[in-house]
Length: 256
Image (cartoon, rainbow, N blue to C red; front, side, top):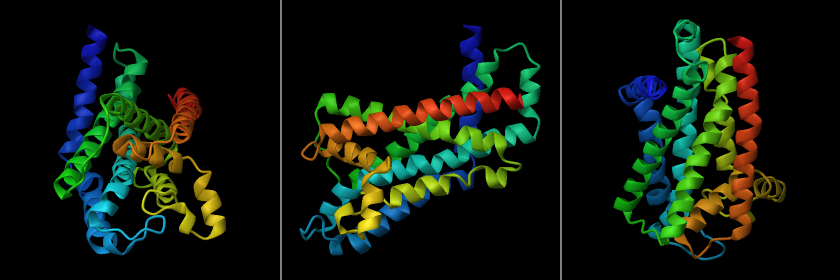
């Protein structure tokens, strides 16, 4: 019970920092929503999806899952920033002198990060619903989508930890997120990969973000669900969690 209370207290502290910081809210919540509005209402009616002319609602149905993932990916930069600020300010060192389990210190950042990313994803989803998005998913697919979202948030968090501990300052702690965003942009998040230049198409089809986006889209719309994409998505996410989880543990042990 004491351990749970300590974890909850530290998690609430980090969530409060994220939800009361204007820069964090604008970047994680505001920017993806602006991009969603811009892409749908400016480009949506002009983009051909697999050779078929579309309107803004068609494009919204296609692109919203990708924007939901982008929202969470942007949140990973602030996970890294918060951990780095606690490290450079000496707050983590002070916590390690207290009679609490060592895993709680980093665990609170992980829990807060996952919760914050899911909140940002939900916000983007609600905006999409207001714009006209209507999901077509069964109860089973809803829970699979929820599991996919949690695992994606967890993977993005694990990726952020080694960079946050290694960075010399908070300004550079979140720079890794640009690479993650690049992978999402060079995927099927916004347009089908078969219209890309051949080398880019090959890369897009074989990098982790494309099957993750396709799985999320398939679960929400159900008509385009592919078991192959679903298995690849979960395979990639589990692999990322394991690899970066080990790296995070070793880096954390080495520094603290």
